[in-house]
Amino acid sequence: MRKVYVVSDNIITSLGFTAENNLAALEAGQTGIRLHEDEQMSPSPFWASLVDLNSLNDRFSAYADPDQYTRFEKLIICSIQDAIKNTSVSLTGEKTLFILSTTKGNIDLLDPKHGARFEESRLYLWNTAQLLQRFFRLHHRPWVVSNACISGVLAVIIGKRLIGSGEFDHVVVTGADLVNEFVLSGFNSFLSLCPGPCKPFDADRQGLSLGEGSGTIILSADRNLSEDHGKIIVGPGFSNNDANHISGPSRTGEGLYMTIRRTMENTGRKINFISAHGTATPFNDEMESIAITRAGLQNIPVNSFKGYWGHTLGAAGIIESVAGIGSIRHNRLFRTLGFSRSGVTHPIAVIDETKEYQTDTILKIASGFGGCNASLLFYRS
Image (cartoon, rainbow, N blue to C red; front, side, top):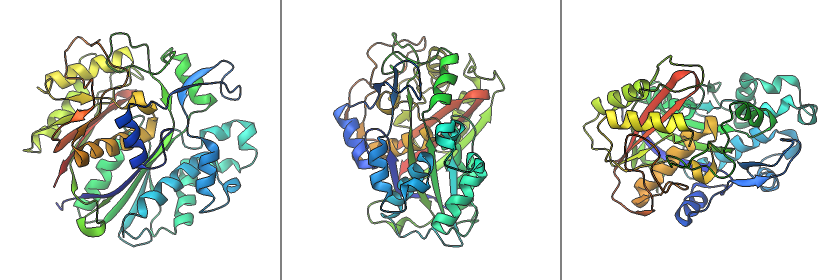
């Protein structure tokens, strides 16, 4: 199997439109989770991390007419454009594939106020794939990965395997999701939304914060396609489904533990840092602490990025992987924003302050509805 390198990346969230902008915000301890009043989304004020639409349209206008594309499509295209400018990977090449990771796609088009401007077929993920193929003149029809909240991590795992096997030389992986009335009402029905910025792993956590955004990771078999990147290797990654419950995670952490164990069995590297899913819900954080402890990693520094930009659903695994890669590049561990006192029964080493730290290998983990779990390694070459 060939080695697979990260040759470029991007993050778009409420904290900025580039990975550099977002990492600077992490360093400063800023959160993009705000109280919003928008009756089109919710009859009452709600806490969420939202990308500024005016700024998004301004950026997108450099590529096409913003009125002809949905908010979801603009997030994807802007993210790809920012990532691709830093590498010589050809999007139109025969050996290049694009993978889209999302849970909801153009979900806001269900609302007649937004959907009336576009044909009904724009709701379907296959249609988004075809639109992106036309926009970027891709040689291959994009693949779509939509598997709850592990979608982003799973998409990177798939891209890594396709390059490793020689089927493709380059894979562009982009994840994106929106916050809208449908998403807000769905999580509200679970009574899982926090009345303020979320507090992952904290004793006073009250639920998750929703966020929207997009992230891109460009993978390649050629580490020399970007001057400043190509120093990070994508390691082994695995996924499974513990078939525990339609929404609740396993109380024993069995599924996530199994993916972590398989990942560790396939590398001889010492893990320096764990980027957890860390949704700040009582059951998820507890399950992750159990799985991490069962894997013997309870003393390895662990954080959640969700206190900065919320839970970005199908984009989370990619956005958080890019942030974790930033930890390797800059030898920094970013604190778990919102955490002050442990609220899980299995003590793990939650990072409570941003600090300099020699980080060579990170483990990214994720879990989602329906019992899905995934884990993936990134390390310095």
